[in-house]
Amino acid sequence: MDNADQSSSEIGSGHTGRSKLSPDDLQAQMAAMSEIMQVINASRHDEAPIFASILDHARTLCNAPMAGLILARAGDPHQRLAAHIGMAPAGVALYENGQMKMDASLSYAARCILNAELIALPDMGQSDLYKASSPVVRSMVDESDIRSILFVPLILDGAAIGLITLFRQEVNPFTASEIVLLKTFAAQAVIAIENTQQFNETQQALARQTATSNILRVISASPTDTQPVFEAIIKTATEISKSSYCMLLRVENGMSYFSGSYGYGEDELADSDVQAPIALNDNTIAGQTVKLGHTYRLEDATTPDYHDHRLARSKGIEFAIGVPIHVGKRVWGVISLG
Image (cartoon, rainbow, N blue to C red; front, top):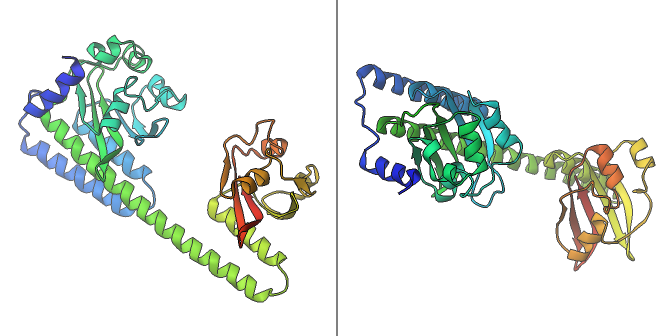
């Protein structure tokens, strides 16, 4: 049986060592949980201070020099290091360089999230993934000197959305009481994530309602002139989607015709051909959107094959989206964002 398997069975049977908590330890834990709840109540729109408070208390109360909070779900390509305290530069670089893939054969973090299971390793240097020469685990042990480690998943609606992890640079397994405490902190992190999501969804809904009201007001004020309406739609779409630009193109007879933009300066438009009629070819956002009849996403707007790649590169735009405007059964136009 490998160490990962041993850790699961040890936790279940209490073999990690149940240390009896002193009254002072219990008081410190209760105070920490109370402080975290206060931060949660004061930061409903921002997870960052909550994550920082959770990791700080977890590291202190569980006697671990390094702590991290990772966000990822099954199906995500990579894990995101949302917060950390004390992690070695080499460990942080694994996330920044995209090496922390959601692959259970590469890291215990991925295994924890994909299987939604708690993992406690007494010695990562003796683990199955270390013996299998996983570059991630090898880096953590050989470069960051990590030995005992604990991964606790963040569970929301039955699935893991991330994890909290604690590291020790010595072989000193986490006790059952420390594991229970970190599970409590993980539950508080989930509360913070839910609160932030609900707050942001409410704010977004209010923003959409306000935007719709403003556009309807412009429509009422301009019953015979569509241009003010187009400009209001473009500006609103840019702001709500937090895009760098938005462009509205009218489609007719195999061509797209510029009908307005927001986010581009006059010089930028003058240096490109976007204001001229452009054929609906496959290398254009409008061409692909009309061809598909639904939303189209170009993952790399700087690729030379893309018609407006120079404009995208100069603007620092990484991707672009085309949304069709349907009038009846035909695509009347396209809104492009990036």
